[in-house]
Image (tube, rainbow, N blue to C red):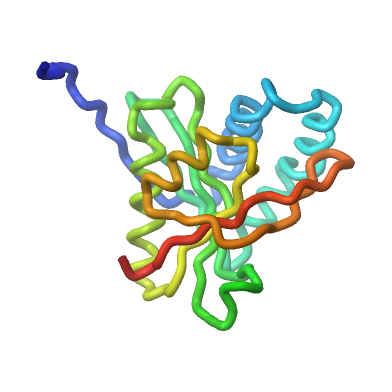
Length: 180
């Protein structure tokens, strides 16, 4: 059966300093949408307060090793990603590895190919800059995200500790070859 729905145009743009408040808001909103249903509310509040303050996002934005990228769909900001060149996994060293630190899409835009457009940007960046690996960290209980990453050729290769509230979790590290 043919699907006659028109594809919504998705635009991908590198964030500017003026986008920092938007990035802060998107970071909190998308993180809450992704994890609020499966986590402790007190831990969620603690995590948001610790990691998503405007000053923290601004400081990350100013680092030469970070690149924030925004996705726009249907005239709305739909998601973002954060690439980092200043952090690698011990199992990838000494290879050149690009860290996909965050990739989040607003729930209203799930299943509208926004995540795919952002992922393609990350893969293209890794290829263009000749990284050996593109890697990320994902909560091992987030099967939806794990399935998405596997569809993009990522494989589980190790673990990374992640603090959420007062708890530490041992999350999956996943990678794909950067040059593919």
